[in-house]
Image (tube, rainbow, N blue to C red; front, side, top):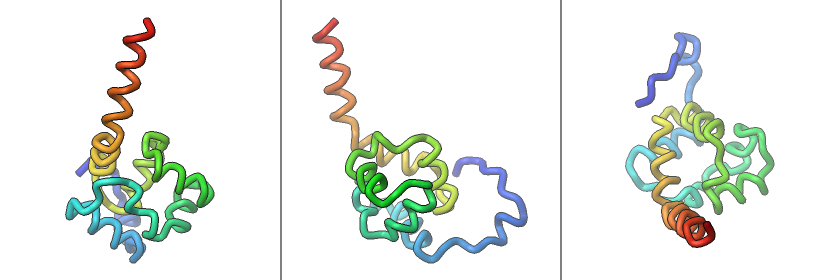
Amino acid sequence: MANWNISKEDNEIPIDPNFEDIQTLFLSGKISKMYQLVKRSPTKVAKLLGINYEAYHNKLSNPEKFTIFHINIMAYAFRIDPNIIHDVIQIEIQDKVKAKVKDFGEHK
């Protein structure tokens, strides 16, 4: 897990029960696409990220739009390594990345 500087006070704050469910899904490898989170407390996660529901839904459909900051906020709240979320996104957008690079190479 990423080395978060978690204070004693942070450790005393219980994980939100809704986020515990998300944590379990990520840690068990059951999340293979970010859109699978669409029915997992979406309003609460959107609020956590400081965005509205529509923007969150858009990011779930287009996970490359999540910022590193968003990934880290979710990871901290879900108490998981941010690399777990990043890995899901990376695999999910791999074809888009390849297409973008290919398109760039064709238009030099």
